[in-house]
Length: 276
Image (tube, rainbow, N blue to C red; front, top):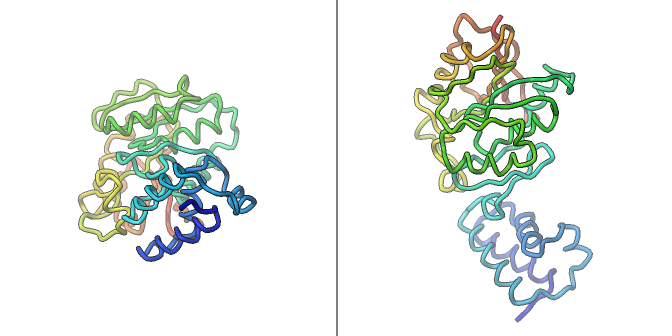
């Protein structure tokens, strides 16, 4: 039996609520909008519209995925970040809104958007950080460093409109060669301590290599700090995403900690270091 948009959404709410999905209302709307290829506002203005069999089957198939805690971004294959949609897959960390704090801090460091910056995104994932910055700084270029081949494919897909200013390095940051000196390096490295308990939608569906790090979550910070100085210009910056363990990062003597910045939830989120 076909249903109206209004009734299909109501049934979806009950179904996801039964499976303990707290965001059952917004998730149902996102999934139905995706199936219909319409904006969410359309669901309100056309709530009496009858869905056809194809739409109903597709909608319920997506609801089943969400009921297993698969993240919405993976189900629809994209996630909004800094005003743009980024393609994601199970090899990439899903962009988080709190990571936009890194972009905000770069804009403060380099207020002239016409500046010709050369920078790198270490452990780029979807490429959301580097690509967002290239969208802001139209004369700049970025080295995207990513060891996962599947993640690198996503970066290239996301960077389609700025590919002429992107250099893709499918390598570990330990092995890269960058012959130009960089104005800054930006990185959201794995920083969650091993054995940390996370929500099901994260632990079951997102890549553990992009989440967890040895040495109580600090290993990737230490690895990058050991090599970053050889890539950076004098007075060049290293900008990390951090969490509550940031106080235990051992900063080499050739770096100064310039700033620790919090996100919108007042959690420490960004560490800015500089080579004097």
